Structure formats: C-alpha cells, structure tokens
Image 1 (cartoon, rainbow, N blue to C red):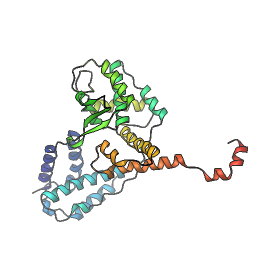
Image 2: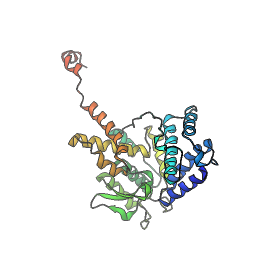
Image 3: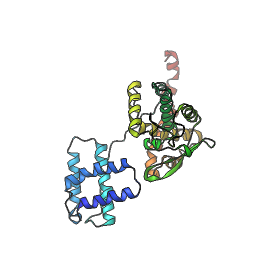
Image 4: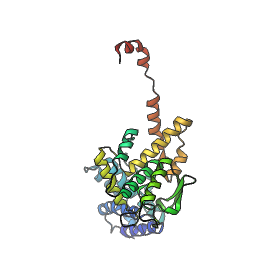
Length: 304
C-alpha cells in the first residue's frame, strides 16, 4: 500500500469520526507537505525513520517559524502513528521527536482593553452590533471556540442554570458556564434579532448560521480599530488564564482539571500551560520587593 492510499484511508476515518471540515482540511494541507517530500507513491513498508528525519531537517533548513515546524511534524507523526496501528511500518513513529517551539505568552487583556473592545463594536445594523458584542462576551467569558460559536443552538441555552451546551471537536458535547454580563448581551441580541425562528443562536444578515469567516472578519476589524493584540483564539486563551488566576486567588488552587473539561481538551496536559502562566502572573502580583523594604526610608524621602 502506498503512503497516499494510506492517507486517503486516514482522512476517510477522520470523516467517519465526525471531525469538522476545518480539521479535515488542516490535515490535508499539512500532511500533503510531508507526502510531497517523501513521495506519495512510496510503499509504506519502504518508509524509514531516516526519511522522516530528513523531512524534519528540510523544514528546519527553510525560513519557517519554529512553531509552524512543530505543527508540521506533529501532524505527520499523528498520521504515521495511525499507519503504524492500522498497517505496518519499519519503525515506531511514536518515538519521532517534535522539535521544540518557543513558548509564547498570550497577551492577557486588561480591564481597560476589554472595555475598549466592547466600545469599538459598531455596525449600521443595531442587531448586528448586539450580536457581535454577545459573541465576544461568550468567547471571553466561556472560552468557547470560534466553530462552537457558529454551531450554538438556541435549544441548548439554559439561562435559568446559567450554562449552555456546545458541540466541540470530534462532535463531542460539553456544558460551559454563562456569566451575567454575557447573558445580558445575549438577551439584548435576541430581542433585536429579526430572525426569531432561527435554530442557530447567531445568524448572518440573511438569517443563516453565522460562518467562521464572518466572525474572523469582524474580530480582525476590531483588532485594527482598537490597536489591541487579540483574536478569537486569544479570547479563549484569556478565558483559560483568567480562570486559573481567579481560582488561585480565591482558593489557592488553579483547578486545572475542571478547566480542561470546560475547554474541551482531551488531556489535562494541554491545559497546564495556562496554569503555569497564571502562577507567574500571581507570583509577580504578590511579590514584595526586598530592596524596597531595605531602602524604604530613602524611597519615602525621594517621593518616588
């Protein structure tokens, strides 16, 4: 069996598992680069670990961001691990090392910046403005993904219990919290929306389910108008980091396990990066300068 045939079977299985169209497209685009380098017509039994290493080195020799290289290698390994399980390979792909990518701390939005973002949401249609404010509120306050915003159904909103159900990756449902401010913006939007019979919570100007591209466009416009660094996914990062910070300050525990459930992560390890960042921020906030204590009298006299 050739690598291309194995990959076609891999994509078919992912479709049967219910992966989103975006996830499928991502696999196709990224693993295509691997197949193009190796040769899709190669028999899987002829593939060696050395060939995979050569692919990784070829990526590293090009002007590609390290985090992008890590993504390319990680996806190739996912595919090869599937091949290893379903068919046969001359090596264990689980041992392929994903090159380290630099750890980037997401900009944590300040209260002022959050206020500026909401104040900058304007449209010539009042109900569109209300819709966009409600979408931003849900992403910031509930941590849901862009695709989950699009697929949100009115029947899954539970305003009495302050929660709602979303369908995440792999068509998996989960419950997420609804804050009072987000609820008020949702109520405002629902009252203004002209499409009262729509099944989707968020619709476009024609009453159809809002698309990811529509959300991406208005978020990018907001970013340009405010000059603040954010995106739909960074809103999700902000939710996770603030969740850990709030729990650390309230209970001394980041509660990362519950956070992983709210985020829809397969593994708690994926969520722990937020815990580490939150600990850093809390440690800095609680820090008391020893030099300030030593030279307190001089500081007082200088009027600093």
